[in-house]
Length: 475
Image 1 (cartoon, rainbow, N blue to C red):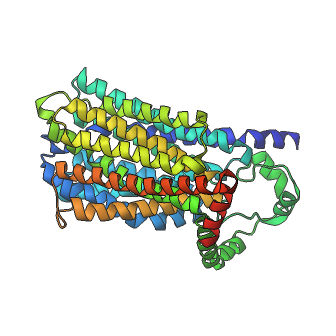
Image 2: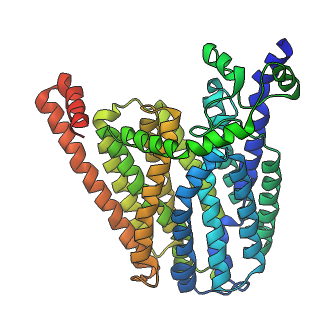
Image 3: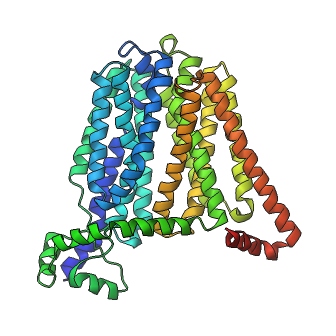
Protein backbone atom coordinates (compact mmCIF):
# COMPACT_ATOMS: atom_id res chain seq x y z
CA UNK A 1 0.00 0.00 0.00
CA UNK A 2 2.97 2.31 0.53
CA UNK A 3 3.87 2.01 -3.16
CA UNK A 4 0.28 2.83 -4.10
CA UNK A 5 0.31 5.94 -1.89
CA UNK A 6 3.52 7.26 -3.42
CA UNK A 7 2.20 6.77 -6.95
CA UNK A 8 -1.07 8.57 -6.27
CA UNK A 9 0.74 11.49 -4.63
CA UNK A 10 2.92 11.91 -7.72
CA UNK A 11 -0.06 11.38 -10.04
CA UNK A 12 -0.64 15.10 -10.57
CA UNK A 13 2.68 15.61 -12.39
CA UNK A 14 1.89 13.48 -15.46
CA UNK A 15 -1.46 15.03 -16.46
CA UNK A 16 -0.24 18.53 -15.62
CA UNK A 17 2.82 18.11 -17.82
CA UNK A 18 0.75 16.77 -20.72
CA UNK A 19 -1.82 19.57 -20.39
CA UNK A 20 0.94 22.21 -20.30
CA UNK A 21 2.50 20.73 -23.45
CA UNK A 22 -0.92 20.80 -25.08
CA UNK A 23 -1.49 24.41 -24.00
CA UNK A 24 1.92 25.52 -25.26
CA UNK A 25 1.50 24.06 -28.74
CA UNK A 26 -2.09 25.28 -29.15
CA UNK A 27 -0.94 28.85 -28.45
CA UNK A 28 2.33 28.53 -30.39
CA UNK A 29 0.81 29.91 -33.59
CA UNK A 30 3.25 32.39 -35.20
CA UNK A 31 0.75 33.22 -37.95
CA UNK A 32 -1.88 34.58 -35.56
CA UNK A 33 -0.71 38.24 -35.48
CA UNK A 34 -0.63 38.29 -39.29
CA UNK A 35 -4.07 36.86 -40.06
CA UNK A 36 -5.56 39.98 -41.67
CA UNK A 37 -2.52 40.69 -43.92
CA UNK A 38 -2.63 37.02 -44.98
CA UNK A 39 -6.34 37.10 -45.84
CA UNK A 40 -6.03 40.38 -47.77
CA UNK A 41 -2.77 39.38 -49.45
CA UNK A 42 -2.10 37.60 -52.72
CA UNK A 43 -2.97 34.12 -51.41
CA UNK A 44 -6.63 34.78 -50.51
CA UNK A 45 -7.04 38.22 -52.11
CA UNK A 46 -10.01 39.22 -49.94
CA UNK A 47 -10.93 42.86 -49.45
CA UNK A 48 -10.91 44.60 -46.09
CA UNK A 49 -14.69 44.94 -46.29
CA UNK A 50 -15.14 41.18 -46.88
CA UNK A 51 -12.86 40.31 -43.97
CA UNK A 52 -14.49 42.83 -41.61
CA UNK A 53 -18.16 42.57 -42.49
CA UNK A 54 -18.53 38.98 -43.78
CA UNK A 55 -15.78 36.74 -42.37
CA UNK A 56 -14.87 37.82 -38.83
CA UNK A 57 -18.48 38.18 -37.53
CA UNK A 58 -19.04 34.43 -38.03
CA UNK A 59 -16.64 33.70 -35.16
CA UNK A 60 -18.75 35.72 -32.74
CA UNK A 61 -22.02 34.06 -33.80
CA UNK A 62 -20.63 30.52 -33.70
CA UNK A 63 -18.89 31.10 -30.36
CA UNK A 64 -22.16 32.26 -28.79
CA UNK A 65 -24.20 29.41 -30.30
CA UNK A 66 -21.77 26.71 -29.21
CA UNK A 67 -20.70 27.98 -25.78
CA UNK A 68 -23.61 26.88 -23.58
CA UNK A 69 -24.06 23.36 -25.04
CA UNK A 70 -20.30 22.82 -24.83
CA UNK A 71 -20.20 24.10 -21.24
CA UNK A 72 -22.73 21.47 -20.14
CA UNK A 73 -21.30 18.73 -22.38
CA UNK A 74 -17.78 19.35 -21.13
CA UNK A 75 -18.66 18.40 -17.56
CA UNK A 76 -20.94 15.54 -18.65
CA UNK A 77 -18.30 13.76 -20.79
CA UNK A 78 -15.49 14.61 -18.34
CA UNK A 79 -13.36 17.10 -20.25
CA UNK A 80 -10.97 14.91 -22.28
CA UNK A 81 -13.30 14.31 -25.28
CA UNK A 82 -13.90 18.06 -25.52
CA UNK A 83 -10.15 18.77 -25.40
CA UNK A 84 -9.70 16.27 -28.25
CA UNK A 85 -12.51 18.05 -30.13
CA UNK A 86 -10.70 21.35 -29.61
CA UNK A 87 -7.46 19.92 -30.98
CA UNK A 88 -9.29 18.57 -34.03
CA UNK A 89 -11.01 21.94 -34.57
CA UNK A 90 -7.61 23.65 -34.52
CA UNK A 91 -6.35 21.33 -37.28
CA UNK A 92 -9.45 21.83 -39.44
CA UNK A 93 -9.20 25.61 -39.00
CA UNK A 94 -5.60 25.77 -40.24
CA UNK A 95 -6.18 23.31 -43.07
CA UNK A 96 -8.97 25.59 -44.31
CA UNK A 97 -6.77 28.65 -43.85
CA UNK A 98 -3.99 27.09 -45.90
CA UNK A 99 -5.83 25.36 -48.71
CA UNK A 100 -9.40 26.72 -48.97
CA UNK A 101 -10.26 29.89 -50.87
CA UNK A 102 -13.15 32.32 -50.98
CA UNK A 103 -15.47 34.01 -48.46
CA UNK A 104 -17.64 30.90 -47.73
CA UNK A 105 -14.53 28.84 -46.96
CA UNK A 106 -13.21 31.51 -44.60
CA UNK A 107 -16.60 31.69 -42.91
CA UNK A 108 -16.31 27.93 -42.36
CA UNK A 109 -12.87 28.59 -40.87
CA UNK A 110 -14.34 31.14 -38.46
CA UNK A 111 -17.06 28.65 -37.43
CA UNK A 112 -14.40 26.05 -36.61
CA UNK A 113 -12.44 28.64 -34.67
CA UNK A 114 -15.62 29.45 -32.75
CA UNK A 115 -15.61 25.78 -31.75
CA UNK A 116 -11.99 26.18 -30.64
CA UNK A 117 -12.72 29.10 -28.32
CA UNK A 118 -15.97 27.60 -26.99
CA UNK A 119 -14.21 24.37 -26.01
CA UNK A 120 -11.44 26.28 -24.22
CA UNK A 121 -13.41 25.81 -20.98
CA UNK A 122 -12.36 22.14 -21.03
CA UNK A 123 -8.67 23.06 -21.01
CA UNK A 124 -9.00 25.26 -17.94
CA UNK A 125 -11.33 22.82 -16.10
CA UNK A 126 -9.75 19.45 -16.87
CA UNK A 127 -6.86 19.68 -14.44
CA UNK A 128 -9.14 20.14 -11.40
CA UNK A 129 -10.66 16.72 -12.02
CA UNK A 130 -7.38 14.79 -12.03
CA UNK A 131 -5.42 16.39 -9.18
CA UNK A 132 -6.05 16.86 -5.48
CA UNK A 133 -7.21 20.16 -4.01
CA UNK A 134 -3.81 20.77 -2.43
CA UNK A 135 -2.28 21.13 -5.93
CA UNK A 136 -4.93 23.49 -7.38
CA UNK A 137 -2.95 26.71 -6.99
CA UNK A 138 0.20 25.19 -8.43
CA UNK A 139 -1.37 23.55 -11.49
CA UNK A 140 -3.52 26.63 -12.20
CA UNK A 141 -0.37 28.74 -12.31
CA UNK A 142 1.37 26.27 -14.63
CA UNK A 143 -1.52 25.85 -17.07
CA UNK A 144 -2.29 29.55 -17.38
CA UNK A 145 1.34 30.67 -17.55
CA UNK A 146 2.23 28.23 -20.31
CA UNK A 147 -0.41 29.72 -22.60
CA UNK A 148 1.16 33.17 -22.20
CA UNK A 149 4.59 31.68 -22.85
CA UNK A 150 3.34 29.90 -25.96
CA UNK A 151 1.64 33.01 -27.34
CA UNK A 152 4.68 35.20 -26.64
CA UNK A 153 7.12 32.73 -28.21
CA UNK A 154 4.87 32.44 -31.26
CA UNK A 155 4.57 36.20 -31.68
CA UNK A 156 8.32 36.75 -31.38
CA UNK A 157 9.08 33.86 -33.73
CA UNK A 158 6.58 35.10 -36.30
CA UNK A 159 7.99 38.62 -36.20
CA UNK A 160 11.58 37.41 -36.56
CA UNK A 161 10.71 35.14 -39.48
CA UNK A 162 8.85 37.93 -41.28
CA UNK A 163 11.27 40.79 -40.59
CA UNK A 164 14.64 39.03 -40.76
CA UNK A 165 14.11 35.91 -42.85
CA UNK A 166 11.41 37.21 -45.19
CA UNK A 167 9.23 34.12 -44.62
CA UNK A 168 5.80 34.39 -46.23
CA UNK A 169 2.60 34.31 -44.21
CA UNK A 170 1.69 31.00 -45.86
CA UNK A 171 4.64 29.20 -44.25
CA UNK A 172 3.88 30.81 -40.89
CA UNK A 173 0.50 29.11 -41.13
CA UNK A 174 2.24 25.81 -42.00
CA UNK A 175 4.23 26.12 -38.76
CA UNK A 176 0.98 26.84 -36.88
CA UNK A 177 -0.63 23.74 -38.41
CA UNK A 178 2.29 21.57 -37.29
CA UNK A 179 2.08 23.05 -33.79
CA UNK A 180 -1.65 22.45 -33.31
CA UNK A 181 -1.25 18.93 -34.75
CA UNK A 182 1.32 18.16 -32.05
CA UNK A 183 -1.13 19.52 -29.49
CA UNK A 184 -3.83 17.20 -30.84
CA UNK A 185 -1.54 14.19 -30.37
CA UNK A 186 -0.94 15.25 -26.76
CA UNK A 187 -4.68 15.43 -26.14
CA UNK A 188 -5.08 11.77 -27.15
CA UNK A 189 -2.85 10.52 -24.33
CA UNK A 190 -4.33 12.64 -21.55
CA UNK A 191 -5.67 10.49 -18.68
CA UNK A 192 -9.46 10.16 -18.61
CA UNK A 193 -10.86 11.73 -15.42
CA UNK A 194 -13.19 9.66 -13.25
CA UNK A 195 -14.99 12.65 -11.82
CA UNK A 196 -16.13 16.14 -12.83
CA UNK A 197 -17.44 19.17 -11.00
CA UNK A 198 -21.17 18.57 -11.43
CA UNK A 199 -22.21 15.31 -13.11
CA UNK A 200 -19.58 12.87 -11.81
CA UNK A 201 -18.87 13.90 -8.24
CA UNK A 202 -19.53 10.56 -6.54
CA UNK A 203 -17.53 7.39 -6.69
CA UNK A 204 -19.00 3.89 -6.63
CA UNK A 205 -18.43 1.04 -4.23
CA UNK A 206 -16.66 0.97 -0.91
CA UNK A 207 -13.95 3.32 -2.14
CA UNK A 208 -16.41 6.20 -2.09
CA UNK A 209 -17.51 5.36 1.41
CA UNK A 210 -13.94 5.13 2.56
CA UNK A 211 -13.13 8.48 1.01
CA UNK A 212 -16.02 10.23 2.70
CA UNK A 213 -14.67 9.16 6.11
CA UNK A 214 -11.11 10.12 5.35
CA UNK A 215 -10.21 13.71 6.18
CA UNK A 216 -7.10 13.73 4.00
CA UNK A 217 -7.48 14.45 0.27
CA UNK A 218 -6.64 11.56 -2.04
CA UNK A 219 -6.17 11.35 -5.79
CA UNK A 220 -9.47 9.78 -6.81
CA UNK A 221 -9.31 10.87 -10.39
CA UNK A 222 -6.39 8.72 -11.60
CA UNK A 223 -5.02 5.36 -10.53
CA UNK A 224 -1.93 3.51 -11.62
CA UNK A 225 -2.32 -0.11 -12.75
CA UNK A 226 -0.86 -1.41 -9.45
CA UNK A 227 -3.29 0.63 -7.37
CA UNK A 228 -6.24 -0.39 -9.54
CA UNK A 229 -5.38 -4.05 -9.14
CA UNK A 230 -5.28 -3.73 -5.35
CA UNK A 231 -8.56 -1.86 -5.20
CA UNK A 232 -10.34 -4.31 -7.48
CA UNK A 233 -10.13 -6.93 -4.72
CA UNK A 234 -12.48 -4.90 -2.53
CA UNK A 235 -14.38 -2.67 -4.99
CA UNK A 236 -16.65 -3.55 -7.89
CA UNK A 237 -17.71 -1.01 -10.46
CA UNK A 238 -21.08 -0.97 -12.12
CA UNK A 239 -20.74 1.24 -15.21
CA UNK A 240 -24.24 0.48 -16.48
CA UNK A 241 -25.81 1.47 -13.18
CA UNK A 242 -23.67 4.60 -13.04
CA UNK A 243 -24.67 5.62 -16.55
CA UNK A 244 -28.35 5.12 -15.75
CA UNK A 245 -27.99 7.25 -12.63
CA UNK A 246 -26.27 9.99 -14.63
CA UNK A 247 -29.08 10.05 -17.19
CA UNK A 248 -31.73 10.03 -14.45
CA UNK A 249 -30.10 12.88 -12.57
CA UNK A 250 -29.31 15.02 -15.63
CA UNK A 251 -32.30 17.31 -15.17
CA UNK A 252 -31.70 17.42 -11.43
CA UNK A 253 -28.12 18.58 -11.97
CA UNK A 254 -29.28 21.30 -14.35
CA UNK A 255 -31.80 22.46 -11.74
CA UNK A 256 -29.06 22.55 -9.10
CA UNK A 257 -26.87 24.56 -11.51
CA UNK A 258 -29.64 27.13 -11.85
CA UNK A 259 -30.03 27.27 -8.08
CA UNK A 260 -26.28 27.70 -7.60
CA UNK A 261 -26.28 30.42 -10.25
CA UNK A 262 -28.96 32.31 -8.33
CA UNK A 263 -26.89 32.04 -5.16
CA UNK A 264 -23.80 33.25 -7.01
CA UNK A 265 -25.53 36.49 -7.98
CA UNK A 266 -27.08 37.09 -4.55
CA UNK A 267 -24.24 39.45 -3.61
CA UNK A 268 -24.33 43.00 -4.92
CA UNK A 269 -20.53 43.14 -4.98
CA UNK A 270 -20.31 40.03 -7.17
CA UNK A 271 -23.04 41.41 -9.43
CA UNK A 272 -21.11 44.61 -10.14
CA UNK A 273 -17.79 42.83 -10.67
CA UNK A 274 -19.55 40.38 -13.01
CA UNK A 275 -21.28 43.25 -14.80
CA UNK A 276 -17.95 44.91 -15.51
CA UNK A 277 -16.49 41.54 -16.56
CA UNK A 278 -19.24 40.97 -19.12
CA UNK A 279 -19.32 44.54 -20.46
CA UNK A 280 -15.55 44.97 -20.71
CA UNK A 281 -14.90 41.49 -22.12
CA UNK A 282 -17.43 42.10 -24.89
CA UNK A 283 -15.61 45.30 -25.88
CA UNK A 284 -12.19 43.71 -25.46
CA UNK A 285 -13.07 40.79 -27.73
CA UNK A 286 -14.31 43.19 -30.40
CA UNK A 287 -11.08 45.18 -30.26
CA UNK A 288 -8.88 42.07 -30.37
CA UNK A 289 -10.90 40.63 -33.24
CA UNK A 290 -10.68 43.73 -35.46
CA UNK A 291 -7.49 45.51 -34.39
CA UNK A 292 -5.47 43.98 -37.24
CA UNK A 293 -7.99 45.46 -39.68
CA UNK A 294 -7.35 48.89 -38.14
CA UNK A 295 -3.59 48.38 -38.38
CA UNK A 296 -4.00 47.37 -42.02
CA UNK A 297 -6.00 50.57 -42.62
CA UNK A 298 -3.41 52.82 -40.95
CA UNK A 299 -0.39 51.11 -42.53
CA UNK A 300 -1.11 48.59 -45.33
CA UNK A 301 1.11 45.52 -45.10
CA UNK A 302 2.05 45.75 -48.77
CA UNK A 303 3.63 49.18 -48.21
CA UNK A 304 5.94 48.43 -45.28
CA UNK A 305 7.20 45.86 -42.82
CA UNK A 306 4.50 44.68 -40.40
CA UNK A 307 5.34 44.54 -36.70
CA UNK A 308 2.12 42.94 -35.48
CA UNK A 309 3.97 39.98 -33.97
CA UNK A 310 6.31 42.14 -31.91
CA UNK A 311 3.43 44.28 -30.66
CA UNK A 312 1.44 41.19 -29.61
CA UNK A 313 4.49 39.81 -27.79
CA UNK A 314 5.09 43.06 -25.91
CA UNK A 315 1.39 43.50 -25.08
CA UNK A 316 1.19 39.95 -23.71
CA UNK A 317 4.31 40.54 -21.59
CA UNK A 318 2.94 43.82 -20.22
CA UNK A 319 -0.40 42.13 -19.57
CA UNK A 320 1.35 39.39 -17.61
CA UNK A 321 3.28 41.99 -15.57
CA UNK A 322 0.14 43.99 -14.80
CA UNK A 323 -1.67 40.80 -13.78
CA UNK A 324 1.26 39.81 -11.55
CA UNK A 325 1.31 43.24 -9.89
CA UNK A 326 -2.22 42.70 -8.57
CA UNK A 327 -0.88 40.27 -5.97
CA UNK A 328 1.33 42.99 -4.47
CA UNK A 329 -1.17 45.85 -4.35
CA UNK A 330 -2.85 46.39 -0.99
CA UNK A 331 -6.20 48.05 -1.65
CA UNK A 332 -9.60 47.87 0.00
CA UNK A 333 -11.37 46.62 -3.13
CA UNK A 334 -14.77 46.69 -1.45
CA UNK A 335 -14.46 50.46 -1.08
CA UNK A 336 -12.28 51.36 -4.07
CA UNK A 337 -12.99 48.54 -6.51
CA UNK A 338 -15.68 50.31 -8.55
CA UNK A 339 -13.56 53.48 -8.69
CA UNK A 340 -10.64 51.45 -10.11
CA UNK A 341 -12.98 49.94 -12.70
CA UNK A 342 -14.15 53.43 -13.67
CA UNK A 343 -10.65 54.90 -13.93
CA UNK A 344 -9.10 52.10 -15.96
CA UNK A 345 -12.17 51.82 -18.20
CA UNK A 346 -11.62 55.50 -18.97
CA UNK A 347 -7.97 54.68 -19.74
CA UNK A 348 -9.19 51.97 -22.12
CA UNK A 349 -11.49 54.46 -23.82
CA UNK A 350 -8.64 56.96 -24.20
CA UNK A 351 -6.38 54.27 -25.68
CA UNK A 352 -9.05 53.34 -28.23
CA UNK A 353 -9.55 56.99 -29.23
CA UNK A 354 -5.77 57.30 -29.64
CA UNK A 355 -5.76 54.25 -31.93
CA UNK A 356 -8.75 55.53 -33.87
CA UNK A 357 -7.58 59.09 -34.54
CA UNK A 358 -3.90 58.32 -35.08
CA UNK A 359 -2.50 58.19 -38.58
CA UNK A 360 0.84 56.88 -37.30
CA UNK A 361 1.09 53.11 -36.89
CA UNK A 362 3.41 53.41 -33.88
CA UNK A 363 0.90 55.56 -32.01
CA UNK A 364 -1.73 52.99 -32.92
CA UNK A 365 0.50 50.24 -31.53
CA UNK A 366 1.07 52.25 -28.33
CA UNK A 367 -2.68 52.65 -27.81
CA UNK A 368 -3.11 48.91 -28.18
CA UNK A 369 -0.41 48.21 -25.58
CA UNK A 370 -2.14 50.53 -23.09
CA UNK A 371 -5.55 49.04 -23.80
CA UNK A 372 -4.55 45.39 -23.44
CA UNK A 373 -2.45 45.98 -20.29
CA UNK A 374 -5.28 47.87 -18.58
CA UNK A 375 -7.79 45.17 -19.42
CA UNK A 376 -5.50 42.38 -18.17
CA UNK A 377 -4.99 44.25 -14.91
CA UNK A 378 -8.70 44.71 -14.29
CA UNK A 379 -9.80 41.26 -15.39
CA UNK A 380 -7.29 39.77 -12.96
CA UNK A 381 -8.73 41.87 -10.13
CA UNK A 382 -12.28 40.94 -11.12
CA UNK A 383 -11.39 37.24 -11.32
CA UNK A 384 -9.76 37.36 -7.91
CA UNK A 385 -12.67 39.23 -6.29
CA UNK A 386 -15.16 36.71 -7.63
CA UNK A 387 -13.07 33.62 -6.91
CA UNK A 388 -12.39 34.41 -3.24
CA UNK A 389 -16.13 34.45 -2.51
CA UNK A 390 -17.07 31.21 -4.29
CA UNK A 391 -16.30 27.51 -4.31
CA UNK A 392 -14.50 26.04 -7.32
CA UNK A 393 -17.76 24.67 -8.76
CA UNK A 394 -19.59 27.97 -8.42
CA UNK A 395 -16.62 29.89 -9.80
CA UNK A 396 -16.66 27.72 -12.93
CA UNK A 397 -20.41 28.27 -13.25
CA UNK A 398 -20.12 32.03 -12.79
CA UNK A 399 -17.19 32.19 -15.22
CA UNK A 400 -19.29 30.42 -17.83
CA UNK A 401 -22.30 32.67 -17.29
CA UNK A 402 -20.23 35.88 -17.38
CA UNK A 403 -18.59 34.70 -20.59
CA UNK A 404 -21.98 33.88 -22.10
CA UNK A 405 -23.35 37.34 -21.23
CA UNK A 406 -20.21 38.94 -22.68
CA UNK A 407 -20.68 37.00 -25.90
CA UNK A 408 -24.33 37.99 -26.09
CA UNK A 409 -23.32 41.66 -25.79
CA UNK A 410 -20.53 41.15 -28.31
CA UNK A 411 -23.00 39.59 -30.72
CA UNK A 412 -25.28 42.60 -30.40
CA UNK A 413 -22.31 44.91 -31.09
CA UNK A 414 -21.32 42.81 -34.10
CA UNK A 415 -24.81 42.76 -35.60
CA UNK A 416 -25.31 46.50 -35.19
CA UNK A 417 -21.82 47.86 -35.86
CA UNK A 418 -19.93 45.35 -38.01
CA UNK A 419 -22.24 43.03 -39.93
CA UNK A 420 -23.16 44.10 -43.46
CA UNK A 421 -26.79 43.33 -42.62
CA UNK A 422 -26.60 45.96 -39.88
CA UNK A 423 -24.85 49.32 -40.13
CA UNK A 424 -21.71 47.78 -41.65
CA UNK A 425 -19.53 50.65 -40.42
CA UNK A 426 -15.99 51.18 -41.65
CA UNK A 427 -13.17 50.23 -39.28
CA UNK A 428 -12.42 53.81 -38.15
CA UNK A 429 -16.04 54.44 -37.16
CA UNK A 430 -16.14 51.03 -35.47
CA UNK A 431 -13.30 51.93 -33.12
CA UNK A 432 -14.96 55.26 -32.41
CA UNK A 433 -18.00 53.25 -31.24
CA UNK A 434 -15.80 50.94 -29.12
CA UNK A 435 -14.13 53.92 -27.45
CA UNK A 436 -17.52 55.46 -26.69
CA UNK A 437 -18.65 52.08 -25.34
CA UNK A 438 -15.86 52.12 -22.75
CA UNK A 439 -16.73 55.72 -21.88
CA UNK A 440 -20.23 54.51 -20.97
CA UNK A 441 -18.77 51.68 -18.86
CA UNK A 442 -16.52 54.15 -17.08
CA UNK A 443 -19.46 56.48 -16.40
CA UNK A 444 -21.60 53.70 -14.92
CA UNK A 445 -18.94 52.59 -12.46
CA UNK A 446 -17.88 56.14 -11.63
CA UNK A 447 -21.43 56.89 -10.51
CA UNK A 448 -21.49 53.63 -8.56
CA UNK A 449 -18.16 54.42 -6.86
CA UNK A 450 -19.37 57.91 -5.87
CA UNK A 451 -22.46 56.36 -4.31
CA UNK A 452 -20.35 53.94 -2.24
CA UNK A 453 -17.86 56.60 -1.09
CA UNK A 454 -20.57 59.09 -0.13
CA UNK A 455 -22.55 56.40 1.69
CA UNK A 456 -19.52 55.23 3.67
CA UNK A 457 -18.51 58.77 4.65
CA UNK A 458 -22.02 59.69 5.74
CA UNK A 459 -22.52 56.59 7.84
CA UNK A 460 -18.96 56.15 9.02
CA UNK A 461 -16.46 53.34 8.48
CA UNK A 462 -18.10 51.09 11.07
CA UNK A 463 -21.30 50.97 9.07
CA UNK A 464 -19.69 50.32 5.68
CA UNK A 465 -20.06 46.58 6.03
CA UNK A 466 -23.68 47.00 7.11
CA UNK A 467 -24.35 49.01 3.96
CA UNK A 468 -23.06 46.16 1.81
CA UNK A 469 -25.10 43.64 3.81
CA UNK A 470 -28.31 45.65 3.35
CA UNK A 471 -27.74 45.87 -0.42
CA UNK A 472 -27.26 42.11 -0.62
CA UNK A 473 -30.38 41.51 1.50
CA UNK A 474 -32.44 43.72 -0.81
CA UNK A 475 -31.25 41.71 -3.81
